[in-house]
Structure formats: C-alpha cells, structure tokens
Length: 202
Image (cartoon, one colour):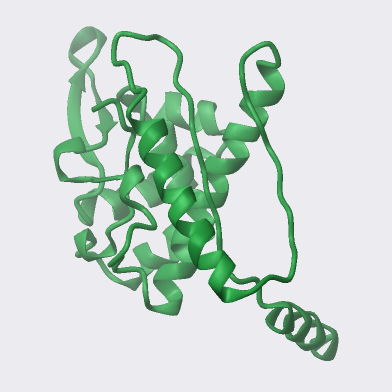
C-alpha cells in the first residue's frame, strides 16, 4: 500500500496525558507530518517547521517516550553524535482507516483530536490543489436540509464511490492523490452555543 502512516489510534500512546495535549494542540502532529517523508535531525526538523529548537526537543522527548517517534544516534564529523528521528511505521495506524464503521473515535476528546488531524491533512490537500491547477481536482462543500432516508441512500453511494476510487490505485505512479469525505449531520445549535459561550466569557 502507498498510504501515509499517521498516528490516529490513541490506544497506541502509552505516555502521560501531556502527549494527548500535544496532539490536540496540533504541534506534535506537525512533527509527525514533518517526519512522514524522511528521517530528520532536530535542527532540520525545526527549520522545516519554523519552530524553536528547544520547543521541538520538548515535543520530541514526549513523542519518543510514548513510542510514537523513534530516536537514533547519528555519527557526524570528528566523532560528534547527533540524534535523528523517524516514525516507527510498522506500529502506526494508516490514515485511510480513519472514519470507518466501528471506529474507536467515540470519546469526545479522541474525536476532537481526530478532527484536528483530519483538518490539517485536508488543508494541505487544498493548498496542493491550488499549486497544481493543471491536475484533476475538485474541492466543494454544500449544506442543506434533507431527509434521513435519502441521506442513508446517499451514504451507500459515497461508500461505493470510495471503493471505486481505491480500485484505481497504481503504486507505479509518482503522483499521489487524496480523497477526503466528511458526510455528517451538522449541528448548528452547538455552533451557536459555542459562540454564545465565547461571548459570555468575554
């Protein structure tokens, strides 16, 4: 498979709640994305993410302790040693598993972390589409009121389309395409309540 390995199964995390907070903030997830394509030293990763080295080292330490990132000693010139970091891909979940029936992301906090990471990946896909306008792409959204019965039928069509999309995978190709689907009831009341709570807190 040519899937990109990412951390979505939170039961893999054996570190303290601080790792949970790091992933939820998005900075730890930025580090994981930064390590997707290759191993990195702290210096190269800090430069890649435009992040202070001391902050990066703190996140890396927690991720290493949690087993999400692997640290190796890398010999450099004149006997000096520098640490190199990589993702233990054999122990990571695959991003394509996100959102499947029976997903473990039922708890509100895990759902929030999942949504944060999904949003980051979708943002990158949208930015990539803008930079590659000659390639096939489509980005759209539509909110409407509809019957549950019709939406249940549409869900089946979406799942069938996903299977058709996956069947076109060709590992010999160089270009990678992404397909993100978020088909869900949209609770306007929660959105309004959130705004009201923010207003009251000011």
